[in-house]
Image (cartoon, rainbow, N blue to C red; front, side, top):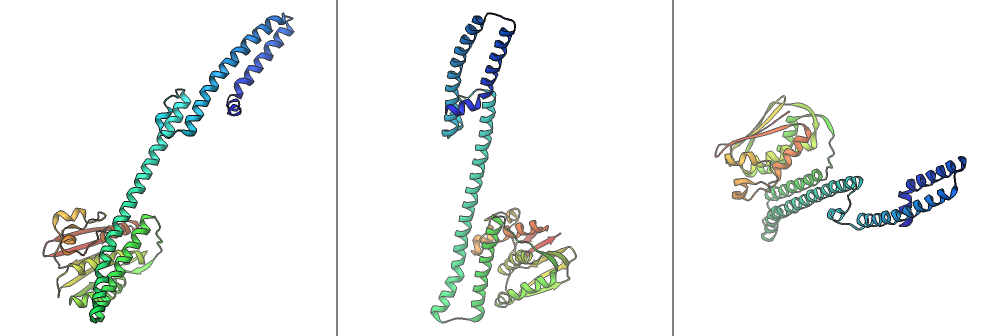
Length: 312
């Protein structure tokens, strides 16, 4: 501690020593009585020792507060302008750390909530598959339908985790929107067959984007369209250069739910009523589309259907 003190105040002692030598030289050159110099030097040296002891006590308290202090209030004894500047800096750092911890805590809570919802939703297709196995009613279409649900829930969870950790792997390439939608229709063909639904794709849009992530976003929209559509209905996909609209003729969405559809974890009336929503599908869809530079909008009317439009 003593060495640290002298290291911090070495300039003071160097100045004192320099001035003492300068006074001695002045007395010597002008042939002044050195007894006066000695008396003055001893007096100043005693004052220097007293001031040093006082400053050392302050220095020790300051070092103890900085090394062992946990709360900013423990630094209230520091009053020098430089010490106050340090205290303000530490206060800002503490506030930044608290904000970071709060953000991390919120992310952990959101993740836990997502996993709870995800596991709850996963139980439905798993239970269905288990029941089919126990009763030996393993219908090929029904099994594929449940496996598709499991795959969609897993994709949503993995996408959520990637975006929460800022780990996206975008790879932009030229692609056809019509081909992309056609591939998704093939993926969901069992769902279409079970509800005896059809899909009408009109137009095309050639664009440069990440095909995998855009496919994920549109798959969430198409999955919702199938879930909430009536049997024997038609899903229309209208594509033009710069826009795609997916139109279903299902149960629709309440007007008061529309502004909150893209909120994290929001399921709305349909999600609660039909027990089919996790509240993360549309949230992740918007996150992906925002990163890719698209704008998504939804219009709907109860019992008449829903239109989801994606523009660039």
